[in-house]
Amino acid sequence: MKMNKTLLAIVMAFGMSSVAHAADQGHGKVTFKGSIIDAPCSISPKSSEQTVELGQISKAALADSGKSTPRNFSIDLENCSFGTPVAKNKVQVTFTGMESAASNGLLGITGTAKGASVAITQADGKVIELGVPTKAQELQSNANSLNFAAYVQGDGASATITEGEFQVVTSFNLAYN
Image: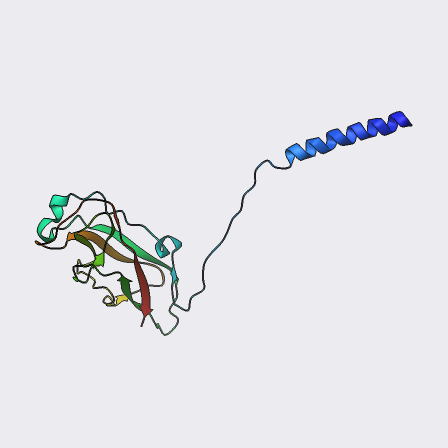
């Protein structure tokens, strides 16, 4: 009987150590975030927070209000539904952020680089002034892309352009008719 209890204790110990080793063969966590908005379209997750790479721009290219090559970006809308009769099927976008020290209506850069600003343009190339809504764009049911571009522009002939890293943050708001 004593032998059976000892044997049972040994079997239990091996069984427990086997379970302890097998218990963590990988683990993780998934977090889902979002918000519910009162709008006829949803904003694609890839559009709600995105980064547009403007590249490594030559200081010489920005001299005398020179401009870099525009880089395209979009705000993608999905699951658009306007009802019958069609209502709120046009949207305007307003970009906001820190204005450039040059007071040119463009976005100011932060970081070690100086003497330049970032311009955002509509698809037709027209510069969008900060805080001013774009012209209304008509939307279709389901998916839509609101297309824009951004470029870096030197702050003028009297501006000293200093090389270095920069960053610009802008927020956008959508307004449906």
